[in-house]
Image 1 (spheres, rainbow, N blue to C red):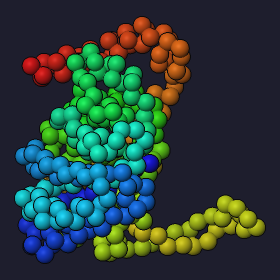
Image 2: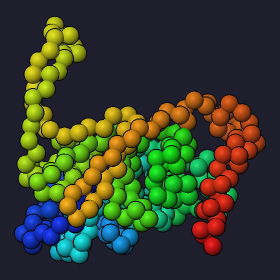
Image 3: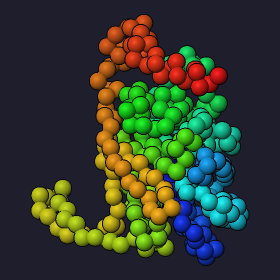
Image 4: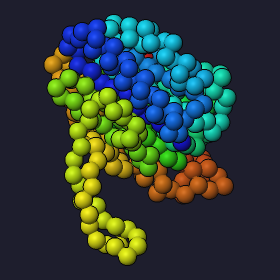
Length: 311
């Protein structure tokens, strides 16, 4: 699978040395992401309070991105408040074609995905809105669906997309309509974050071991239980990085302001779509024609709004 990582920054002024340090930490994080489960290409997106975004992609090893150090730092200096990063382990679609690399863009949504989902039925629905894929990667369908049905990433509308996801996933996304807000959520695949309140930074990654040591994340003592062997069931103490780990269904919204990054948490039903079984006719405990009518009834208002906005 792939790996996710990045940072959310307050809009407070920073020195050149601080921007240099953040750039080094981002590249250090990306190196660890690639070393863990990547190597087929890397991508970064920089998001600004006015809705602008910039993307850097490279299908070669992450060390190639060190040659873009000045560009990355300048993107931060120019006022980026969110950086999304993705290191790819491809399961389909050659990474030398950069349209197959994350982040994927279906304006106003820009996002990254770790996992695998079945996408054909999603594109069948989106075809009714004249939406088509530009890559051959399953992940793209997630962000196309969000752009159609939840272009501000509001939880109730995001659930529509989640209900249609079959597979495994952890997701990060930014909407140009809410450009200072990062949305993340997880189903099976892991996500965690560290809130550095002093510096006005929130760092996130798939797993805590990906964070570079230079971040100086404190450790905490935790109780664990032996699962195997002669000590099975007994507890012991261990230390681990003091980060917040998302559980299945957890969703988090980070909003960057001048003084701080606010955090709002919510819960999603990540198994709702699995209440239906796939049949020879399509998706659900009903034939495809009924499935199509279900979408007509439930999402017609959204489709009408989308088509109106597209004009």
